Length: 412
Ligand code: ACO
Image (cartoon, rainbow, N blue to C red; front, side):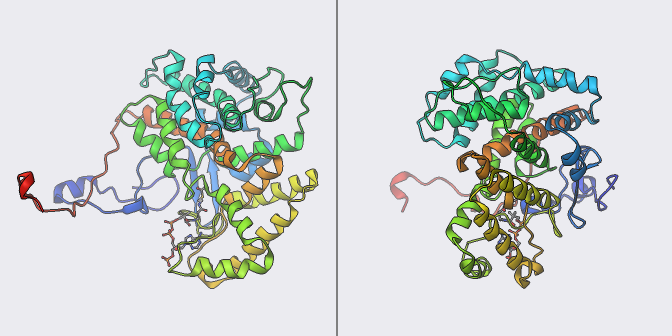
């Protein structure tokens, strides 16, 4: 077997069924779980395409909603199609008042990702809709609905966590402008000025994170969806998976690490710590399961970091210099060279988000906001297949032999 690109694949199902044996692949390092026409990664060449378009091309020439349309429908939209799509999204941006009430039951100070897992999982209970997951139009409508509502859901999670009053979206703003408006505007103020450089940086961050083939959270969404579960509940499962520091939580962890390193003189000590097999510390924002040469998103992110820090004249330049020092040292170190460990997209994204004023506990929520279209497109693609198979891996049992229950008083 072969995809249109990528290495040859052995379809082991028939052979292994005949032989009566299983394959073992913890972490799925050499297992393809599906056919997909959405995203392609060449880890050796450092290439990433959405629907055949290079990520650099899309980041330089498209808006985030254009990329969302591309991921969901497979083609870039015409002017008319884009306008229709933007309007459809705008019309769905508000969330139900009862869902807003639901947020008030969370503690002030709760992690916004914990809130997001809860509210997104509960979304179907507040929508009074019964989605027929077998109908393509209903799946597309569900994708648009959750894409549209995500900025308000994310902003309300932030405002709940920080005890701030809620702000509603405005028709005059675009998708990303509305997100910034709902996050940062003062409900008592007359007006809110949107900085186009900040909007552009955030749009690019959204585009870079919109999809990444069968990563942990996307695979989680697909497995959950394979039981024909409600798609919003599947997205909640994806958010839970994304939260971890080995995945979407890495950008938050990068800044915590840079804080701990403090200054350039300490870089060598931390590199030595990361190399020590007896120390569990890893350089956060370094390494990737698929990219073994460079992560093409990292270079774009580094350029955005320079642009935004210069534009905002931020005092965060020190942290950028520290990150660059760490990157340079690690890239010239045998340990990292031998293991093909390069900075990934999250190495610089936290620096950009912090410069924009996004609190650190919201970083992974921003990632989820960007990735929701990828999750829904992948789920839509999976549900379009004529033969649907529930995701159900096997295991190698290594537990006790069969035994009998002893009477309670005879147990040791
Ligand atoms: N720092 C130091 N050593 C590392 C790092 C790192 N960041 N990443 C991997 N290694 C080492 C491992 O210790 C291992 O060494 P060994 O062969 O001597 O045992 C070797 O490199 C291979 O590591 P694995 O964990 O087997 O690689 P895997 O492909 O399973 O993991 C992952 C990839 C999870 C991204 C890993 O590199 C990591 O933990 N990185 C830090 C967290 C991070 O940045 N996550 C974001 C990923 S990108 C994203 O989700 C958007």
